Image 1: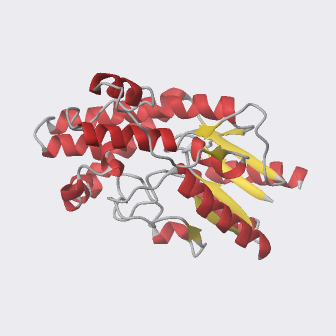
Image 2: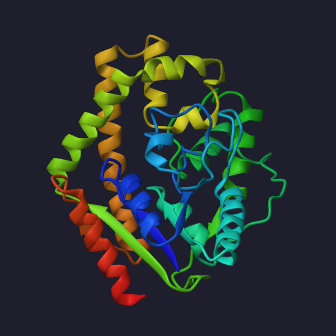
Length: 289
């Protein structure tokens, strides 16, 4: 059996995962694209040692902030961990809101073999246009042809085959989604952002500032905005508001992908008594397994 717990930020995925690990003899595998990186703790709301409650956690803090880590890399490492846990009789519990990583991990996704590309016939403008087709909006040194061609090459080499008939490669996978009223969710997101600043998000970013051109910092919500504050592009108030706005937009995109790409059973979070949410999910799994 494999359990997947997903949903937007601030819905309680971490707490649910730990409790289910206790119930089903499980260990937790990270599926959050920012929590792979060391020293990015506050801005990613990474699970703390206390929150782990002695449950083993895998694929957290495995990369330095300046290192690349593709979905293909995650697929290889994640499947290795899953297979090892299953052999030991453990229940892999995959937790995170990066839905594309979850799908690449559990479905028969085939990645293109990396190959050298020839862009000599493309203008810089066309290369930029092709990069933006991958959802990249902030591009450094757009006049640096070597940099932008390398970026496009990486994007094209990491393209995966996403066919509608993709099949799960594991048996007995339970896809659990946590959700709540949008208004309440956005309030929770705003509260989480405020808490991040109280806990020292700015200091956390200052410590890795010298790596500010790293992909992890340029794309991670909470980090790219604080970098702009440190570079005097945004005021502190503008920075905080932008993080909240980008987090809300990201939550919307998460819902869209999860609803259309994964066979998730959704549970409304009971913030007043989270134990009821835990019990509901537990009973659901026991009814089928």
